[in-house]
Image (cartoon, rainbow, N blue to C red; front, side, top):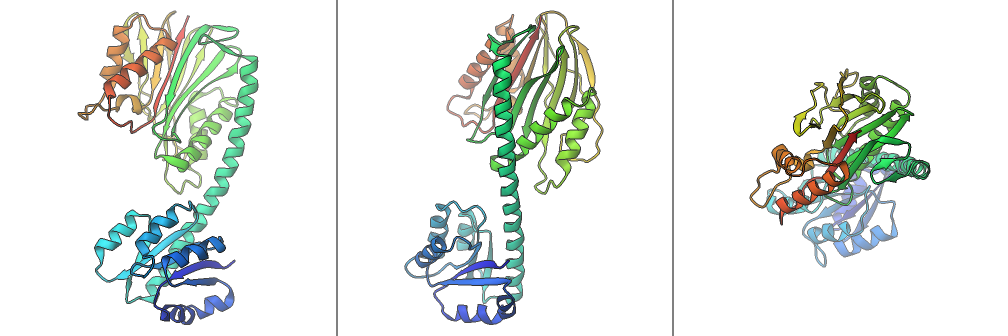
Length: 385
């Protein structure tokens, strides 16, 4: 299939040069060129030919220059499309502006066509990857819709009432989530494994945006599936990690805490994959759950994941959270920290999961004030009775 390139240049001999230098690729159908003499005309050509995947854009042109074109083309929101800027040698100011406005790469004049051919190849490979990623995202969205439908069915069978799940009066649960951006990278879940075991997951995916969301969906799905197939907590994370390591071209990872509560005995078995240790709140004392010394998921294939068990007393509470809580900063760039969480717990003891999550978030917002929220804020808390 031909790779479609739009050349935007007010020097007409550029068309002749491209046709001459790439005549074999054009003749074989490997490359296909479109042409425009300025940015405005280039936008119109792009609208008429959505199959165009790459643009070679001269910075200095009449009517609409290359920098303005970059700003305008960004409004079209074309995901699998890249712009390579052509600029005079040494024009670093405009090159920096172009890169800041979304240019993928740049070529200096006079053009070295060997360099241009390599740049086209690199751009083509990146666009091919983006297209495959888009297909995967669509597939993941379909999976997530199925999970949402399944969760709604489960919710109708086991409704959460005042923080408790029907027929599971031994446990009260509280949770809170506020993403920093439209799409968050944190996730948490509480799910039934069998009639006497509840699974608790909290995780924080590296990065933001669509890529993080896609990785989040993969992580969430893998843990949920493997948790219903394995009784060994560490093995669940091992299998999920191996799955996430496959074809992980973006080198993404997720810190993940997964634990299972035996609601009859209070035994809480867990494995921590590089996540912040949760707090165990017992009789007014606050301590971190012992580390299991495991790496985050998605980094090292075939990594082993240790597990640990703590036996809860009646009335003990476990609070799980992401670093969006501890690393939240006020206007003086001072972090809320684990000490901030401990202070809220002590000032509001005895704590109940639902009210603790609500109070903790309120205190966090008051502390942050007018400072920007840079990371997702996620809280998950449960108390065993």
